[in-house]
Image 1 (tube, rainbow, N blue to C red):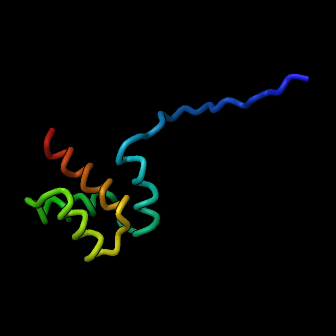
Image 2 (image 1 turned 120 degrees about the vertical axis):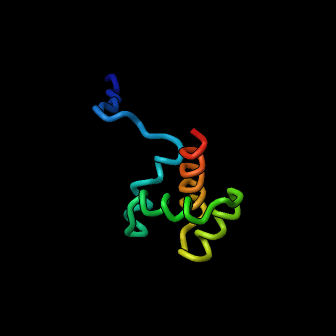
Length: 79
């Protein structure tokens, strides 16, 4: 008997990169991504890892979430 493997069908494109963390960040910390981006921009200029450390210490954000936020915020500024 043949095995049928279900395929993933969705009308939404798969999110990758820092933005893939955003739903979890909003759910975990109770603030919008825009809130965090504004805080990061207000705290700049600073090096990427300095901003990550600041978010971790001052706001208790996990490393991966802080890194995703900073990468997105700095990437948006560079464009």
